Every structure is written in C-alpha cells, then in structure tokens.
Image (cartoon, rainbow, N blue to C red; front, side):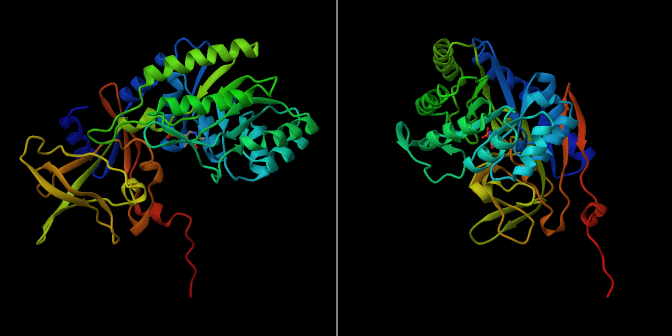
Length: 401
Ligand SMILES: *Cc1c(COP(=O)(O)O)cnc(C)c1O
C-alpha cells in the first residue's frame, strides 16, 4: 500500500478509517508456520479478540488457521465465517457453566481454567474432551532473569493444584485431550518461554490421552523505533526440538498449537485520521485529529506508543507535535513527537493498528465507530461501513413523558 493508495481510500470512504493489509497478515502467518515446519502437526489458532471482522476471519480460514475464542459470540462469528467447530478453541475466563455447555454442544474444543467448572462440567459431560488451562506462574523478570510470579493471576489453574485436577479427572472419568497455557509472557525472552514450556510438559505427562499441547501466545511485534521483536525462527528451532523429544517420550505424536492475535494482525493495520486543528499554545503544538480514545484506546489504556506518520507530507521538515483527539476527555496519542510538518487537513496514519484497536472501539461522545478496509490483491475492499445516526439509536427505547 502506497501513501497514494491510502489517501485515495480516505477520499473515497472518509476519515477516520482502519485499513488492513491482507498480504502482511499472510506473511506473518507463513513466517510462523515456517518457523515450526519441522513439527508434524502444527495448529495456529488466530485469537479473534484482536480483530474480529468477519472478512478478516474468512481470510484467516483461507490461510488454514483455526480460531481461539473467548466468548460464545466469538464462536458464533467463527462458525458464521465458515470455520468448522473442530477448528475452534474456546478459552474463556470466568464465564458461566451454561455458556461453556452451550459452546461444547456446538462441537467446539473447550478449555477450562478453574477447578469449580472443571468438576461440574466433568460430572455432567464426562465424554466431552476438555483442555485444561494451566497457570505456570512464570514471568519475565528484567531482561534475562526467570522469576516466579503471577501467583495472583486470575487466569488458569495453578500448577500447585495439579493434585486437585487429577482427583477431579479420576472421580468424574472425564477426558482431558489438551493442556494449555497463555501467560502473556514475553517470547522476546525465549528462555523464559522455554522454561514455562517445561512446566507445561511436566504437567502434560500426568494425562494419558492428550491430542495437543497449546502454548498460547506472547509473540511481540515492534511498535516503535528501537523495539525488538520475537526471534520466531530461533524460537521455532528450540521449541520444535524440545517438543519432538517430549512426543517421543510420551509415546505419541501430539499437535503443537499456538494462538497468536497481535503477531498476525498488528502490523497489518493502519488507522487513518485527519487533522482538524493545529493549535499552538505557549509550550506545545497540538495536532488535533478527528478521532479519540473512543476509536483507539491503547495509548490511554496501556501507554502504548503507536508510531504516527504524516502521509500527506512524508518529506516535510520534522517538528514536534502532541497528537491529541477530539473527545471531551484527555486523549493523548503522542506527546511532543517528531513528525513531518503538519497542516490542517493532513492525513496522519497510526501504525500497528490491526490488533486491539477497532475491536476495542466504542461510541463514547456519541461518535460513530469508523469503517474498515481490507486491502487485498491491490484493491480496497470495504469490510465495515462507518456507523450512522440510526446505529447510535439502535436498541435504545424512547419512552414518553
Ligand atoms: C488474547 C489472547 C491471546 C492472544 O494474545 P496476543 O498477545 O494478541 O497474541 C491468546 N490466547 C488467549 C487465551 C488470549 O486471551
């Protein structure tokens, strides 16, 4: 996608707008599968919550991905997009037994992350295969240290509770077919991840009829200059070797699964916005754009730094700007950032806008959520219209006084 392509998209479909490059998604998918090409049975389940547009899901299906879902609604989106139930994993946290039962009934692989539901589900449906989400209590401490933490994380069943798990499995006669972890730990630090994997392997040997081991995600992508990214190739080599040894000792070839969200879609996305006002104060030059944290909340929620480029003036002299939004709330996207000279009306592009951007958008300030474009085969495909006034009122009920 060239700057001209992007400016044409804004002209045709209005700003603000999300644009995703299908080719980049495919390249990331292929990079990951190539790194694990020596694994006989590899399954990449795309984490729907990162970007859940149905056309993006359909594109993932053409690549051969499965899906990782966290709600029954995401499961239904996946089924609607054409995924087979057996290619969907459901990894909820803190949802009701009835929702888990409803998803299991659809034929989707369920993944349970607490003892209470495990026992209830196992007693009622001992024949339904269940995966167990483990909390290995591992996180990166500093750059290279391995430290034990997350003891109070709400996710997963603690490895210290394995005896409880085994008792439940024995008492209910339930069928455990997978072991899973998703620590969110940083695979930048490959050694930390491999350390957590050892804990997963140690857990797995307790279960005799496994089909797969799911290593979750944690793949990092660069957001700003100087960020390093996961060395997927080195990671693939090391984990593959370890996995092969495990399978040999286990006595059976298992499937190795991952569930990346950010890695597949983050860098494929751009968020295009227009500058409404350039406001010079005594200390700062603000570039105020036609969006806010209602459309892109990561900088305010997580302190994430999305690189911002002025695609209307890519060769202009660099100056310092604070890029802020238009909602009535502090919504700072960038503080005193060096950007090519900005004029009112210019189009600014936010990078890394594929993951957790549109999917976290809201209607705060009664603004419409933006449109989405999938750039595929050198063509802009509208995959979501921007909202209209009717959408704002949908489901609201006017009573008379
Ligand atoms: C969110 C989530 C993922 C995806 O995480 P990324 O950092 O986007 O790769 C994977 N697995 C589970 C269970 C999740 O909740």
